[in-house]
Image (cartoon, rainbow over all chains, first blue to last red):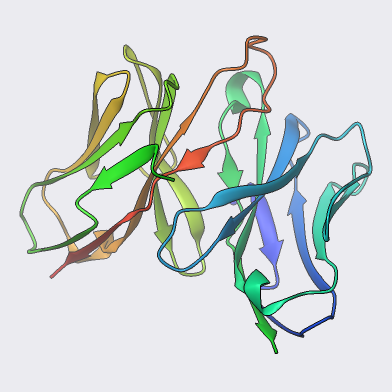
Length: 113
Length: 118
């Protein structure tokens, strides 16, 4: 059973547009939600992360929106640039028995010039 | 991330062969992980180790084994490789937060090993 469901699988956005990637989870024991960015030929790297005690976190053009009651969180990339073209993974992690990462299936973003 | 290295970077092998993928880290982290990445499936956890004497199975451990030779080294072995083990394999590390109940540790990934089993 997939612990974290991610959509869409792929996304094409024009330069300057907004990219939105969504994730949903079921396990209320999760309390840390990072997003990872992966460029071709490289390993994933942490982009931004949020804990459920806040509903939004912004770092530059990247924003996580978090809806605890709906058990959903999303990544928004404002003013998308061709250099943002990469695969994005959401993830979730909890404490105790769930103290390891569960990743979504990934979204391949292509930002067209 | 140069702090986490994986060898080899690419490997082609035949069905039935035993192979080992190696991971080394200079970050001084206590936790190490092995993942495989397949298109449309994301990253799936194979094994993880929270310290040298602690090894745990992940979601998809069948057909794999691991060895934590030292805090800095974590190896993944395929005992008898099969074609559906063709994938991209990543090693990752993280550090236990000083408050062991917290879960905000960041994972640092190596560059990956592309494995093809013919």
